[in-house]
Length: 187
Image 1 (cartoon, one colour):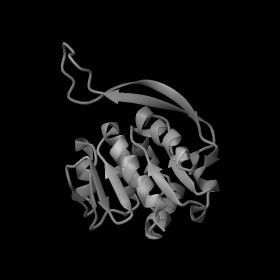
Image 2: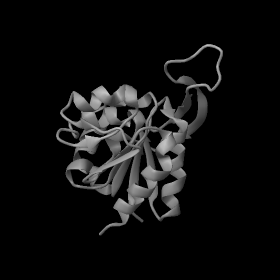
Image 3: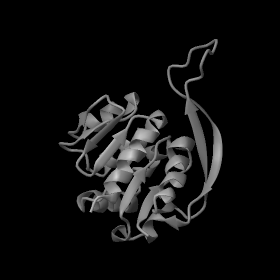
């Protein structure tokens, strides 16, 4: 069974994380949840509250479910994975400094294996140096992460560029997973 890496950390966005966790096995893929350490992590829910008396300019964050990482990044071998799914939330803000994760990311992208990325997950691709000359999308507040490393931001629900498929937010999960699974199934 082909294995997909799903890196997480505290404050990974709940819908960005759990949708691929459950969706990918439906098509025959094993998902390995990994973090800086093999431990229990806290996910969060991000949304701009509808109809709030006081308008929010950014997403409000609330606690989500917990998720166990069964492996630490440093203990993984990039060649063991058929692809990677980079989730959003605030976790990528600090995961982008994890050298083991960046090395795995560079290897998987460089090997031409499918990589899906949603929302703030783009910060990991940017830090790994995988966006130069590539088209990608992300949540509006991360556009600079694409542009500062020489990538081209495209404001569309899903953008495919070679082995990368990116989406803006969890609202685009269905189209993102459809494209990612199609890439994974190509010979």
